[in-house]
Image 1 (cartoon, helix red, strand yellow):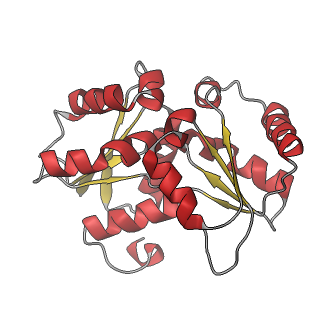
Image 2 (cartoon, rainbow, N blue to C red):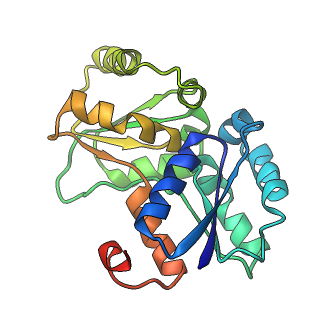
Length: 220
């Protein structure tokens, strides 16, 4: 069995770990979920990096792969970890990239900390289409506590869209906890609005890092 460590600060990491176990049963998933430092891991890149170093110290050099199920840590610190711990493999939750053959209006649901990074601004620039960013800093904690109601989630988004006079044709989830409301968004916006998360792209990175060949169905 291959040992894969999934690191995060809340249910986003739990959701991904569950999915990873289902998709690739040849891996043993070790969950390192730092609930106590959840706020810092979502808000402060420097402190998030230090917390990750401390939490992952027992696993670095021993795991076959370490996965950051945290967008902020990925975009601000993945290169740091890869350079500092050269014998350890890392992958992270990158920002999902929609199909760009057709230019479509994009709504990104994320947090302020991610939206303020240079990486994020470059990401929007390279999309080369109309985008709107909605930062939802209170949602991760609400999701972790089971307190985000479907009607409140939709109401918040619709109020923003009405104010901005914007109707998305694609939605990007740039916070791992937001996977919890993906079905709610699909139900509300309909199948014509495609919703992107980081699962598939991260899975491809994982398979490449672990040298697992073939489709996920074949891996099963």
